[in-house]
Image (cartoon, rainbow, N blue to C red; front, side):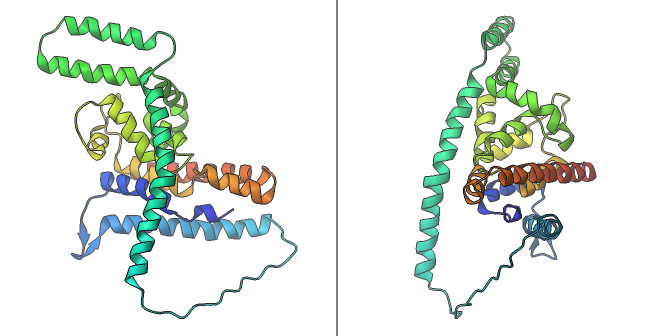
Length: 285
């Protein structure tokens, strides 16, 4: 019930891109990184909440038998640098092989959902902007029309419709429909969030820019910036607490031989993430 609250390495890509977007790269006392403090704070937040939740669950979940944890501490020696190098390479290989495979599959699926839509919606959008294109010869205006065409095309795709459907539920947290799509896809693996955003913004924006630049330039329909400090912190806090891990639920189901506890995990952690994100967004927006 509490282990998933501990921040894992899968959250690192999400934290890294959002911290780079919203937190200034400044230093306190000349050597303490503000971005590093935020990263450390997110990890500590998970630990503190795990302690608090475990304390609360100790009154709710009654365990009849006592368990004991015995750990023999090893003799501490200086690290062998060769072993460290081999371990780093092996861990990186496993990540690319396992997580990379999931990211690739979901990115391809998301590209399809972002490029096609139901009925003749996409055709209507194409015809609309083809008519507008014929009415102007100005290069700047044509460029703007092309960007608007890609944006409207994405909104009328399967992915856009899905995002727009859940947007009212996540809007109080400062999230837009694209973030909503990322929340759904990253349920398979949290690190898929970055790949999802890259796919969505690549479909909508044809210019050669980094993902960070595209996300910094993202605006809402009213012209306001999407990734403000409030939205970015709210999203990071959501990922600290939310049960965005299908494999964890599968393991809990296998160990407990019932769907009761996986569902309890999913419901309480999602509710906790929603409440905490709402509070953070209201404080910093």
